[in-house]
Image (cartoon, rainbow, N blue to C red):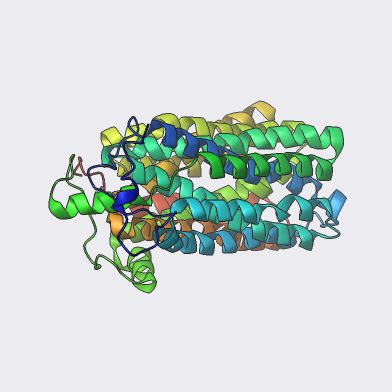
Length: 452
C-alpha cells in the first residue's frame, strides 16, 4: 500500500534526476500534526534519546576521574574545562551549518552525517594518552550533537502544527535530557565495575551502532513538510492561528543575513539568543564544576552520579509539562520563570550541605531548565518563516551552545582566580537573573494565539 503522504514517482520533474533526500512537496499531502505523523514523531524521539546518551556518558565520569586517569591537576580549572570549550565552539558552529545545510540536502542526511562523526569518540577516549585526546574526542562530540540533535528538533517542528510546538519540543528535549541523566547514572556504575575507558567504549559503541542503523532504516525526510507549509502560507490555505513571522528578511536570505538578523537586528530573536547563552553557561557549571564541588565536599562517585543524574532526569521529565504549558499560556512567561528559578537554585546549591539538600537543589535546577529550554526553541520556531526556519533555529542554537565555550572560559577564569569553585556558582546565578530580566523587557510573546 502506498504512503498517502508520498506524492509518488510521477511527481518528479521530467528530465531531472529524482532527489532521494528532498522530494518535491505537494502541499495538501504533507499534513502537519503529531497524530497524523505519529510514527515519524516517535522515531525522531528515539533518535534524540540516543543523542542524549552520547553526551550524558561524559557528565559524571570524566570530570571526577580527570586527575586520576588523565593527569589533570584538580586546581587547573581552565585545563579541565578545555574539553567543554572545544565541544561548545564546534557544536555551536555546526548547529548553524546544520541548519543551512539541511535546507539544501535534507534533515535525514545531516542527521546520518552526525552519527558517522560520532564513531571516533569512544575510540579516542579508550586510547587516550593525555587529556588533549579527550579534547579531540569532544570536537567529534560537537559535530555529532550539532548535526544530530539539531535535526531531531527541526524535523519535529517540520511535521507538527504551530500550536503543538511547545509539546513537540518538550517531548524532544525530554527524550534527550532524560537520556543525559540516565547515561550519567549508567556510566558511573559501569565505570566502577569495569573502569572508565572500557565502560565508555562499550556504552558509546553500542549506542552509536543502534542509532545509525535505526536512522537509516526508519526515518523519513521531513524537508517536504516545511516546503509544503511555506506553499500553504503563500496561498492563504494554511489552517490554524496566523503566525507572527518576523518580516525583516526576504524569503530566501543569505547565511550572513539570517545570522545577523537573528543574532542582533531583531529584538525578540536576540533576547532569545542571549537566554540560550545563559542557560548553557549554567549547564557548563553543572556539567563539570558541580560534580567536582560535590566530590570535594565528601560525596562518592555514585552519589555524585545521583545528584547530577537527578538534575538531568528532572530537566528531561519536566519538559513533558513545561512544553505543553507554553502552548496554553505563551512562551515568554515560562522562559523568564525558568531563568530565574534556575538562577536561584544554582545559588542554593552553595548555601546547603548534604546529599539530600543537594538532590533537592538539583530537582529545582532541572525544573528551571525545563521551563526555559524547550520554550526558547518553540519561540524561535514560532516567528521564523518556514523557508529559513532551520537556519534561524541553527543561529539560535549556535549562540546557545557557544554558551558552553563562553561559560567554560568565564567560569574557569573565575574559579582559577579564586582557587575555589563556589564563586563560579555566584557568577552563574547572577548571569541567569540578568538574562531573565532581558527577556522580560525586550522579547515579545511569539505564540500565535496569545498577546502580552
